[in-house]
Amino acid sequence: MSTEQWGQDEQWGQDERRGQDERRGPGERRGRTARTVTVRLVKAGREKIAYPARALGDDGTHAVVRAPWAGSGARDFGFVRFEPGDVFTEHYWRDRWYAVKEVRAASGRLKGWYCDITRPADIGADEVVCEDLDLDLWVSADGSSVLRLDEDEFAASGLAGRDPGAAAHALAALDELEAVARAGGLPDLLGPLPAQA
Image (cartoon, rainbow, N blue to C red):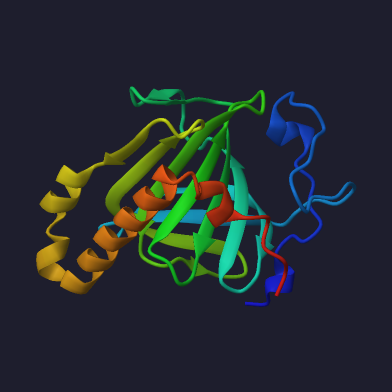
């Protein structure tokens, strides 16, 4: 894929912001609309969900997309509530075993970061395919809450028996993200939007 195909000049429009002000994220410019790509999340060999997203940048290793909450309604996890109007800025890597999603309310208020432990993403011209490996990490906006999630699902998945190498990568990725989060380093990990390669 030519990373120039990804939306270098993008606008986070009023339709996606659902009434937010016209503030734009790093690297965003007026007047042009970013390309739409499809994000496909796969789990245990089956597509779990697919949704459209705006391509914001791709430097050949790290790609970023933005999408509204793809759920059909609100979902309360106890530690965070995702609801219509929330906006996810999603970071995917071709060489890392995780994806990080910055979650903002419709007002623009940062809710936190939802981190999926995944195989490295397959990023093509029109889609991002990411295989979920069950483990997750939630980090609240102020960093006071760092929660490891779904370790029971990971153990029950049998990945350690089927693919011990992938299981080891998944556990190492969770440990790495937790350490970064506890040190307050998630914003630095994500950095500015990646430049076009």
